[in-house]
Structures are given as structure tokens and as C-alpha cells.
Image 1 (cartoon, one colour):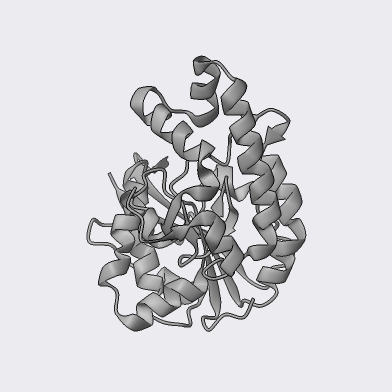
Image 2: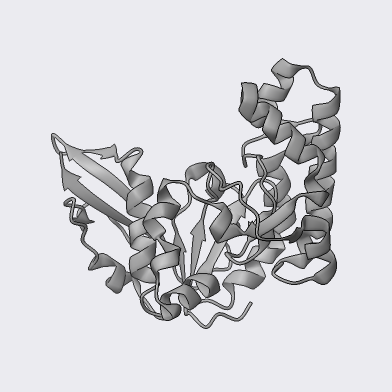
Length: 265
């Protein structure tokens, strides 16, 4: 992978998804090999989607709920789309994902340079697709990285199948910026990294660190927006970021591979 940016940003997908579609059905996207960056993962994706379909068809509602972690109408919709996965219409991943973090990333309002930097640097680590780039065309779907069904444990599956791929991806970047939740981080092979930093947000309560919780999703989106303003960045650059809500670099609690932004609570 050749980046026009000198860094790679690792992000999770969004649980909340925009149901609107703008492009061809997924099977056509794969045939055309357009806006499908990691085409070499297509066979693995097909294995997962068809196995998931089989499990949903033969499972009772309670088991279906456990697999997809949904109930009622949302579960019905997700099952319908999963069973029609190959024929579902698509849109770009960055348009599909519309959760809190992605609203804060605010891709649509970026200038062209920022958009290019974002598209070049970001990799999503995902339960259904393994890895995605922002402009990859995908259908609406539901499958968490922590999902288990049949013989499949998605965390284990992607960890095993992406191990060598991460070696290749990371060999061509000067800095890997890890903004993943712990569940997604378990998939990643960090053994071949030139320079790495994990980013966390926390509140200081009576001198002790407390996870920023749901607020961290918005903060993650805003720091991504900050990073992609340039095609080159460093750990020292990241330390300069300050947020209007009071979060800033905490030298006391950070280390060589971890940047923590804190605020007094």
C-alpha cells in the first residue's frame, strides 16, 4: 500500500449506518473491482456472509438476536439485508457510517486536501469485511467484530487471516495512529510497525483516570479531522491538539506508545 500521507489511521466502523444507497449492488462492485480496495479479501468475506446466512436461516429468534445483537424490527431488517447481501445496493463506507464519531469527522465539510488525506490514510477494521477503505462500496450490514456463530469467532477469524496483510500495510507508513476500541485492536498485528501510537481520552476524577465514555466517540472524530488537515504528522504534532471542552495532552499519564488527552472533571 502506497500512501500519499505518511501516516495510517486505524478506525472502527460505525454501529449506526445510513441506509441510503447510491451505487450498484454489491456483487457488481466485486466483479468491476472498482472502489473495492482489498479485493483479495472477497473470498473470505463471501465465506463469512454465506455462513452467517446459513446460521440465521436455521436459528430460532433468540439465537438470531444473540448473533446480530438486535431485536424486533431492527433484527428483521438486518436479517433481510444479510440474506440478500450480494444483491444489496451499495454506497461508500464513509457515507454508510453515520454514528457519533463519523458525524464529528464531518467528511462532507472537509476541503479536497483533507478528503484526499482521509481517503489515503484511514483503514477501518470491521467484522464483516475485515478491512475497508473510506471509498469502498458496501451494502448496509450488521456484524460486530465480537460476533460468534457456528464455527466462527470473528475476532479470531480476522486476526488469523489478516496477520500477514498488516505486515505489508504497515511497512509502507511512517506512523500508525491507533484509534480503535480494544475489541478491534485484538485483530491487528502490530509486529511490523516503524512508529506507533494509541490515542485515548479520559477524565481526571480526584486525580484518577476515568474513561471518557460516550464522549470519546465525538473526540475521536474531531482529532481525526485535525490529523487529516496535513499529509504529514508526527507524535509531537499530535501532542499539540487541544479541545474546546478542555481535553489536552497529558504528559504524566502518556508514554512512548500512548497519548492520553485528559480534562479535569
